[in-house]
Structures are given as structure tokens and as C-alpha cells.
Length: 433
Image (cartoon, rainbow, N blue to C red; front, side, top):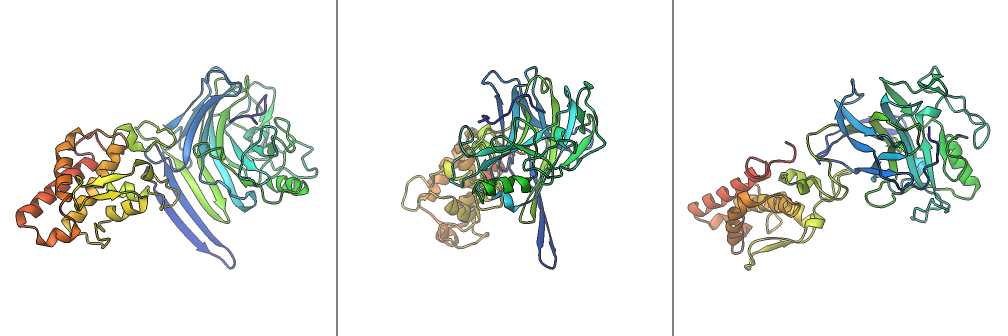
């Protein structure tokens, strides 16, 4: 529960998909593991409601207790100043109509708080569909799902006549004995936000109740002439789907809590995000894991070129990259699609051949150079790269069959050294270590 409204708040995924066919609806369920080496559209944002110095933290942790999925969760603290906030924001649902949401739920664990608060959800809403997010004085909106309000006791609603269901009842008094609540410390609690009570920053709320169901909120906007409100990102890093703690002293002072099992469904296609601890630094938005000084494999790069699931394109920003030292057969990689082709052993002629040693050399050299462009230390393979580039300046995939036995052995040795670098056997180490 906040004391002020927050309307001015500015890796490799493990995916398991199950599809169930029904008479009229196809249901799909996917689980994505989110961790420092694979943020999958999620980014932490720390700040202060009143532009002060933030005391909040956002991270991943093991536990607490037994999380609903996996062994870890995302962890929030606010510190001494409860006007500080920690947000975990996803940018993959930009321009998603609110009307298309068919699941929205998550779990929370509260270790310490003053009152009845738990991590809450915020959605950025582009009310008028102009593709611009302008909640401060504009028509656009922030809507809030707060566990502390899911008591079934907040009436009237906006619009009137809605029934906001009780969740995690029965209602009890908060730890300070002043507020009816359903938030319980020391246990994991599941929240169904799709069917729960929300308040709106611009269209019905007042820093809290009156509440509305999402269906009621859509009716309110339709009555104002806005038929297709959408989730919208503030920018590429500040996604329009948020899990938040803080932004309201004193009730948020010294908060310590976690969230996990965040599930969002679009037209009955559900994605569950399993937040997991990994002993790696958390990358800043837009900075790939290899900027942290580690290396990744050709498989990582193929899956992070913008063509696989929700995985972002981490390649384009690191291009162009030359494979060769400038001779007539040097290849200059300028697009993510070209990079994926080379990483997939299609070589200079675009024809798949995993037995062609030059195709393998292209793939491993490109993967190494991508990691280096992202900040990985190249000293362990600098001589190997020089030799590989000298070779590829005069030879390409079509030359493999005509090489001598000694030349082929040299190519395979170069490729093997680069493979060891990309897998962390030599050099700064692999990002998954």
C-alpha cells in the first residue's frame, strides 16, 4: 500500500512448451528461465519517487524457502527510505492490447515489511494508441495491482457495481495492527492479477482505491472513446510490464521480499518466467553478458540474433566484423542474418556443410570476435585470430577440398583453439560459469 501514487516513475533461456488442443481454443504453455546470462527482455531499474538517492536493490537470489518454480527468485529491498523503489521490467509486450491478456499472475514472498505490502504489478498503458507514453498530464496511464488491496473489502469500485474477489484470505490485521490485509510474511503467496483489483493513475484511482477489474477498466476507457488500450514501453530498456517494490514511505521502509512464477498469457498462449540465481553480475539493459568479460558459444549467438523466441538481438550492435585480414576472400559480416548463416556452418557460399573445416573456422572465429567486441579479453587467442584472419583472406569454403593434409590440420587446430576460448576452457571463462 503506497502513501503516494507512482504516476511519475519514469542469456540462454530454458523453454518448455506444452500445447493442448481443445474444441475451439489452442492453449500453449512455456517456461523461460531468467538469470543474469539470459535476461530475456527483463531489466532492473532502481530509483526514488522524489528524485532523492535510492536505497533500493534488485537482484536474483536462491530461495527463499521453496519457490513455486525452480530454486530461485527475484529479490527486492528498499532500504531505509521507502520512497526508493526497485523494479523488474519486461519489454517484450510492447503494443500488446490489454484485451488480449488471458493470464496475468505471479507469486510473492515477504521477509520484512511495515504493514501489509508485497511486490506489486504496474502496467504502462497507451490509452489513445498513438505509440507514445505520456502519463504525466496526458491521456496515458499507469495501472497498479497491489496484493495489499485484494481483501474483497474495497468498495465502491470504478465503475460502480464490480465485485473484487478476495485472494489469500482470510483477512487479518497487518503486522502493525492497523490495516486489514491478506499479505502474510514468511510464505509464498499466489496472486491472480487478471481477475483481481487494480487502481488507475489517471482514470479512476487516487493513489490507491477505488479499484477496478481489468474488464471494468477497459469499459471505462471505451466509454471515453478509447477502444484498444495497449501495453507500451517507456523505451527499449524500461518495459511496460513491471514488478515493483517501494515508492511509498513510510510503509515501504526496510522492505525485503521476492517474486517468482510470473505468468502472462496472450490469447491463451502462456509464458511463465522462472527467475533464478546465477553467480554472475547482472547486466545493464542493452549490454550483452559478454560485456562482463566472459565468452559464449556459437549456439548462444545463434539464439540471440533476434530470430528466436523473446531473445533479443545482441549481434547487430557488435557489427561489422571481418573474417579475414582484408584479402580478396575476406568476409565482412554486416547483418545478424548473415552472422547466423555463418554460425550455422553455411560458410562463404551459404551451403550447409558441417564437415567443411573452413565453415567451422568461420563459425568459431565469428563467435570469438563477437564476444571480444562485447568486451571479452582476447589476449589468450590474439595469435590464433591473426593466423585465422591471414588464412581466410585467401581461402574460403570452396577451397576446403583442395587443401593439403597439413593445411587442413592447421585449419582444424585454429578452429579447436577458438572453440576452447568460446567454451571458456581458455581465456576469461564462459559466461555460464
